[in-house]
Length: 286
Image 1: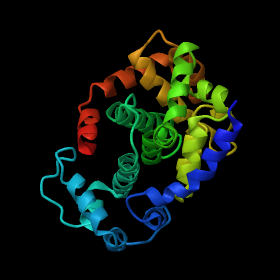
Image 2: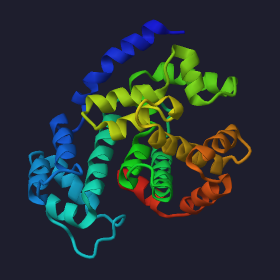
Image 3: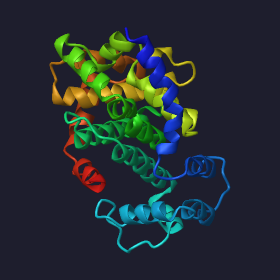
């Protein structure tokens, strides 16, 4: 177990807020202003985004892309928030932040960023629908948590590419889940790594905790059901690709916790996989 390596890595993680392509204060204010109890106007939200002109430009570029299919071009963030919704603006900003990290470091040759985003978005889509069906968590929050659930893998690949490669080799040679190989390698999985970074970005517990516990939802002290939604969605996304693999067994074990049937979850995942939204989302980020 590589304790010295992981301790050194963990000490670096809070400083990654400085690697965001915009001020970390933007995220903090955005989540305060768009919270359920907030009385802040759309204009004030737009002003928060407008303090970073580069961010504003990118938000409007994405909002006006073919992915959203707006009938008329929006020319301000406040208008984009009014048309798309606050949660969608938050997702755009978070996605820009995560994608911005990837542009600051050399990506390992074997890390496919496009496939990474496909999986993240797919899990988010499944989580949103499961949330609606089970009334666990808020669907928009569950989508966002799904979109972020594997950020720890990306951060490991960016900041510790040799360790990332060693973990992947261990997982493949020993037929382990990635989280199992990470725990074997240095005593901590990517969920914890990702949650530590998201916490340093001042994201709320409703998003951070389901990311933190998505490989052990039963251990979550306050967000067990939401963590189960992300865990189940992750397993379903993998099981669609390999119905006979180990994720199918994990899926079967998790379904009773949300009073769902395996066939119901798989049918939902297979239907969402056929959506063109996934490919369009990935093209947005290229």
